[in-house]
Length: 123
Image (cartoon, rainbow, N blue to C red; front, side, top):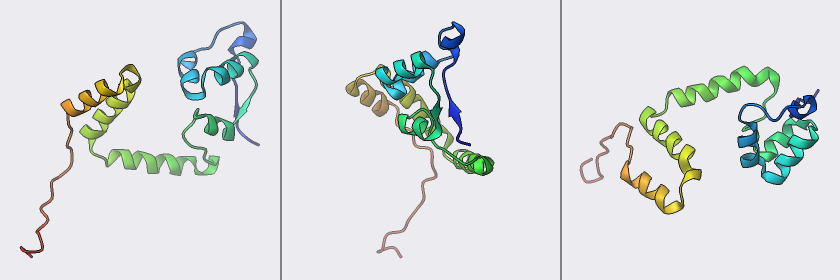
């Protein structure tokens, strides 16, 4: 059975819940968001992936393994750089390119060990 999802709120006389009304147009575009929200038709996993509503589609029996791999990658990453990157990406739609670049250049983040690599002359 293929996983499916839909916006059921309008079927019970309610508007979209949580942040769906904010996120859906940003991911799928306004026209597709209107179609999804107003018609309440189920969307399968492949369509959700194509529209950018999900990042990955994983078989149920591999879900825990995939989550573990992703969590380990994040846990072993440079925490300050990752935090700064998340802030930059979250605020990107609030700024034009020039503003975003000046924010980035104003707070460079280096969060990795600096390794000494001898040059060929020193080796």
